[in-house]
Length: 88
Image (cartoon, rainbow, N blue to C red):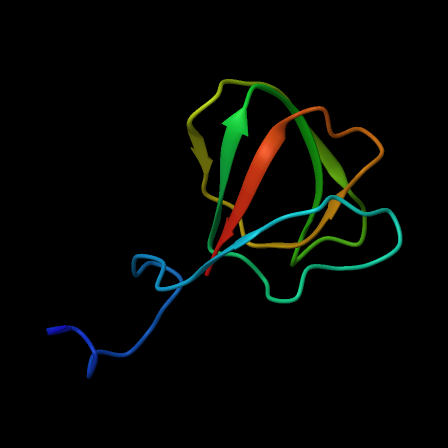
């Protein structure tokens, strides 16, 4: 596979190069801070942005939404969205 961008510097504004399935948890943080989060099934998502000391809830997200937020955690409590994917 040819990756024309392999020598470009990564940044928060660059497209994601990796993705991982998210299992919301009240006890643990994500393995990597995200660049964005894909919401596969509609609902709410409770998360901790990397610059916050408190969680916030995004309400009423539609299936297929890409939420442009750098998050350190996605909480089980308050999250009703499903099929969540972290983009890094």
